[in-house]
Length: 130
Image 1 (cartoon, rainbow, N blue to C red):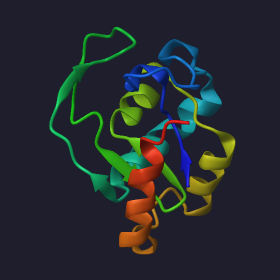
Image 2 (cartoon, rainbow, N blue to C red):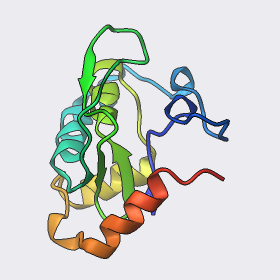
Image 3 (cartoon, one colour):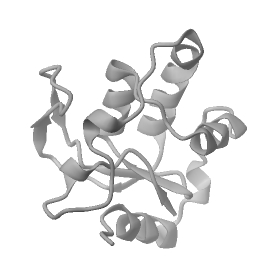
């Protein structure tokens, strides 16, 4: 399982991940044309773990992100709830392999493919620090 949208600010210890400001962002028409589909896919995928904390946006827009560290998966990728915010509000671009997977499912998450074992794997992968 692959992580997407995780940055070093999410971890208390030093990890080999980019910082939030290092994520690639775009306001190109091409990306904006699919961003709404991407955000819907991220939000409509199966929840692996639900958390109720609130944190401010790390990119400084001032928005409070409720349940931001809640985890979602589509069976191959795992991400936090706040990833949708960073895509929608700040134009964060996701890996092309992940975008192609979404497109392959016609922008509708494969909810039926995610079972308990995949959910456990997603949970383990999300916070794995190497």
